[in-house]
Amino acid sequence: MSRPIFEVIALTAQDAQAAESGGADRLELVTDMAADGLTPSAEDFAKIRAAVDLPLRVMLRIRDGFTPGSLDELRTRVAELRAEGAEEFVLGFLGADGTVDLAATGALAEAVAGCRWTFHRALDHSTDRAAVRAAVGHLPGLDTFLTAGSAAGVAAGREVLTAELAKSGEPGYRQQILVGGGLLAEHVPDLRAAGFDAFHIGGAVRVAGWDSPVDTAKVAHWRTLLDN
Image (cartoon, rainbow, N blue to C red; front, side, top):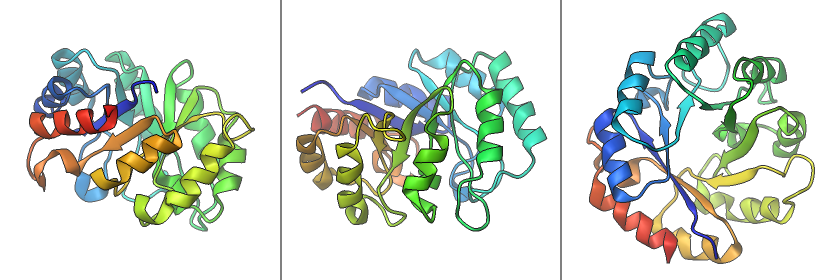
């Protein structure tokens, strides 16, 4: 069984260095976790980029929730980040009715043309997961869906995740599943045995939640857990 991808959320250069030291493979960069993770500034991205050698996926979201807000502002943020060397992103938008906002998602996919990107957990909050996958699965650069299988987290979404993994290779299911959202250590053995090979962790590698930095020892513990 191949070594799984281990992605850790980082808010600062300190977080990034701790995650790298603990064995993370990739970082998701955000700011303002009170709003569930918004786009960091280009300056913060540059500091983190200078601090580590890991691939960095940058969140593209300027407001809480899954509606896009100003596309002009998002495009400006993309341009600033790409000017600083950003090459990978995280994005995805829903309409107020819970269906995918394909116009907004497609516009940002175009703005990050040539880059790899993740469709984030908007998938879990949509009214029709299959419809989201069908609508965005053809967009260039999309190589990952970050999902727990349910808005309630991995414990509630386990069967959905397994069913989607079984469809790997079909239209809308050709991207890698990055399991994240309420992921606990106790979920890992069954998920690994089922064939999942990419995992996303945030608060679980911090001693006291989002008010504390990433802890290298906790990252190393998860690294060992995933590898075994």
